Length: 327
Image 1 (cartoon, helix red, strand yellow):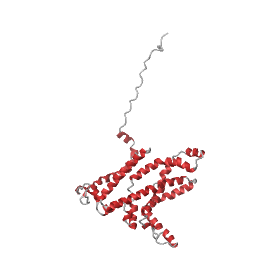
Image 2 (tube, one colour):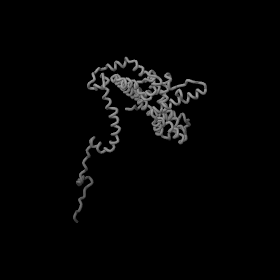
Image 3 (cartoon, rainbow, N blue to C red):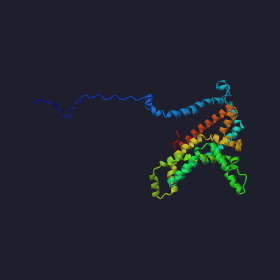
Image 4 (tube, one colour):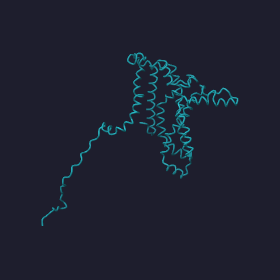
């Protein structure tokens, strides 16, 4: 009988028949290839990137005016260099010191009162059992955010002004002369109250998102263990809001010297510059209206540098306390 197959002992190694060659390993795509592959996704970034490029980064080139005796007729190339002369003038200008003092006072009041307001409102609305009532309250508190400061100041004037609703009620009770809109002594608290009324509702959106991410099992387990509503809020809800609150606090510290240009500009004629002059309005009056472009630019540049330093310091401090920071 002819042998059709060769028997191989168990210890003998056989050679595998050559098969089809393995596919060549793909080369790693270059950055240009990856961008081209996802080109339609990147097109959505173009409008936002163009906005910041045109209105944020390109204008930074104009900061060179802070080191010049700039006039629009000469232009940047024709204006003489004065070094740090404009910065020296800022530190000896009493209006700058007054504007800086008002800016810091309003900024501190906003951090103390306006910053925690959205957190408190979010916790309050979250405690409501009726979803219908909760949505109605949310809609009402969101609306002021979409109003311009011109309308907001007009509304407050109709309520707290000399001829407003509150003044009319007090006149009926025999108390005359009430006008909170022109009281320079309480103006800074009035500014903070306006900010809370206008922006507090909108600020709760972020904290609502953080609260929605808390697993319901935590609340159920705490309720089974006998925790009260306040205890569940203190030990479950508030710790979940700490990372978001830290992030927003760092960002607010970075813009601490920006306290609302339009809001204060509209009310400055009613209370005077001594109460309502801040760095932003100083830059407007001294630079745009006064023509002292170098000093105004130096003040704006100094404000930006201080804001950057504050952001870096607050971010580092948050990391030392065990937080994540923003970068």
